[in-house]
Amino acid sequence: MGKHEALRQQIDQIDRELVQLFEKRMEVSTEIAAYKLANDIPVLDAEREKTVINKNISYLHDRTLDSYVSEFSKHLMELSRARQKECLHTQHSKMS
Image (cartoon, rainbow, N blue to C red; front, side, top):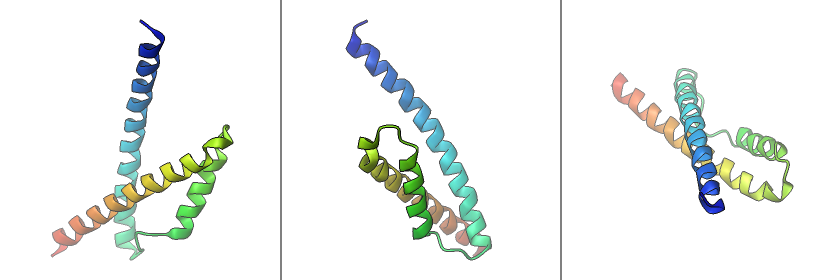
């Protein structure tokens, strides 16, 4: 196996791990949606999102990746919000 194929296999393994972590994150987002519904809390908490982005950037060893982690975090939170809204819509439909 050549170097290129070995690197691709590493990427494939990382992707598998990322998908598993993403799935866990979305499961927690679903739980958060239920909590927010029960406590009349809006889905978007802009201050919390800023805090999360800054915290995630602080985990970096390679600070040249700051803007990438910021964008990655923003997209991830957008997906989590979409999931929460979907769950809230489903819950409202069940209650009707």
